[in-house]
Image 1 (cartoon, rainbow, N blue to C red):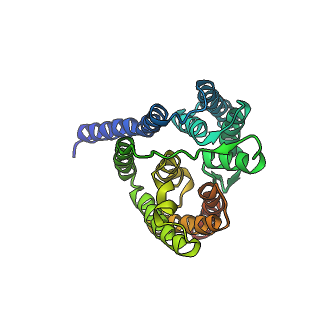
Image 2: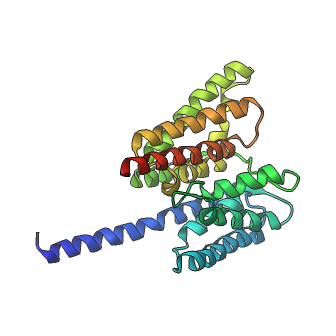
Image 3: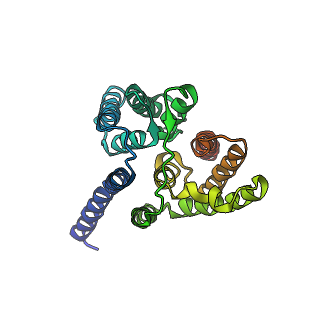
Length: 271
């Protein structure tokens, strides 16, 4: 292959990566719009503006201060919009605090040079645990309106497939369904009651963005499948103990532990 052909190939590949980088922000915006205009999942327009602007400003300031470069803001936008969707509050300060804490976790809480918590998961979990009187989590379902849910699931599956993360989403979803059946046998609740959270906007963000985050997932495919299963397993036990925000806490506990083990083993092999 000539040098010119190789250069053209690299340019096309670069453009493809650039275009795909903006697919997740567009997709999460679709979840926001579908959820809000169908069921009104947003607290207020002020809340979403505060969350997104706080996230982007914190990202830009810390990236410039610590790395001496301006970082692409697509990740910060996803974090901000996730915060605005996933927490409920009658006041505005939690949206700013959650967004700032989420981005700060990327730069402060690091292991072997890597951040180990999914940013929005960290900020939301922290706020739900430490400020339960001021903050709640999103609990709205799509109800009987299946069209928004189907569109989002189809697009979401296409995006995680393109990102080579489909096996993570499918492992978690299948595990959640199996554990929902097991919980129904233990608690006496109907299977449909136990599995119904999977159809809500909260879980769509969780399965398409949080557990598939490339920066905070282990690198080998078998490890990713195992971690997704373990997240569902820990969530199963948390739900049995009436933990309302079980998926957030399960990822908060399992994800970083898996990343630290992975990075430690990787460093040992390198030496």
